[in-house]
Length: 229
View 1 (cartoon, rainbow, N blue to C red):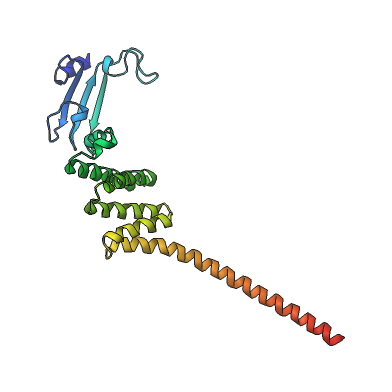
View 2: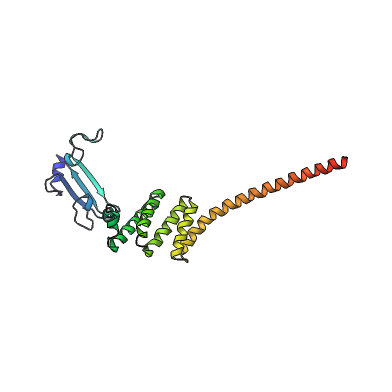
């Protein structure tokens, strides 16, 4: 079969002939499977039924007992191994982790937030930034807190949650009172309130004028009735 011929040219990953791989464009590290692929790598994987869709297949596209050929390219990724390890720990264990690990966890969560933000997934970005903020507060790592508060402030602006945007902007300014990004984000949030206030003042002025006009009209009628008498 064509798969048999192709398989003879591919690398046996597991050593039992069940998963075969051919590196089309080498990455930066040894190809040991999808989980070990490197950024930029483009590879082909040949999966026998036991490691693909099994005896059932996936009708109507994948027949039963099918050998499947995948082409996989890793465009980008974030290593979350330490993040997963950290969040599997107890609260007591959190207090004993090395500073280097905590910094990595906070930075990874922040980068996840950036990735979500760039895809306009603002709710997901907010959750990632909040996670990073929560862990960051445990050690008060000011150098890491500032960009997190800036990112949270900008994300809340995009979500039209201006009070929250002001809150995180002010937290950033507490760390660095002259930070231009924090000042700008607070200005963006304030601008929305200015528009609302101006609209309310405009409506109030119109109502006040209406009241004055009605009062004048009423006084005129009362004066006219008094003169007639």
